[in-house]
Length: 224
Image (tube, rainbow, N blue to C red):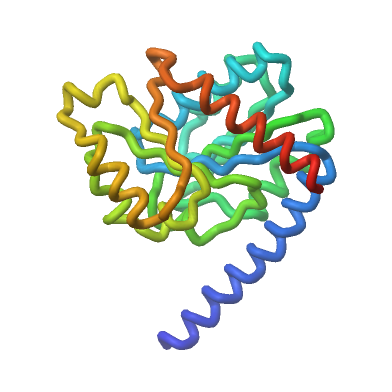
């Protein structure tokens, strides 16, 4: 029984990886730089993404977003208020997004019209670590209100991510967040991972993050 379950899981992941690779090629050819944002619930993904979108569009970039949640379209409506194309993916109990969902929901979009695509994954630090969505960069968010040991508790997610964002940095002193311990834990699990410390509400660190992703997109296009 355990062997059979393992075979089924491997088959699902292999199929997902094949589709994700095709999506990645499609995104690269279209010139759209894609991000997969992952975190636990309440880490501030949507607020962070709202600020990122508004600042990118103010700089003249074309942006779209996909939003994953078990139920409701609350986050999708929040992002749609920025004026960009947004689609809400309701997973109906599934704890993560999968590549076939991304393929389905972008099917009627002209992705050549976008320079950035953000995928806000379901709030979960376990399941999403196993599922490639065809993104160029996986971004894991850790809020100061969650404590410093999240990377140690969920190593697969932090190890598989390309960038780490420490959110709600304006609350660090109030919640007695130990910045040095958090950074040490991040680099213990993923040595050298780029880390940005931000507050979306206070507009702290967002411009440095934007400069980074714009540079990453340009670098990717120049080498593709």
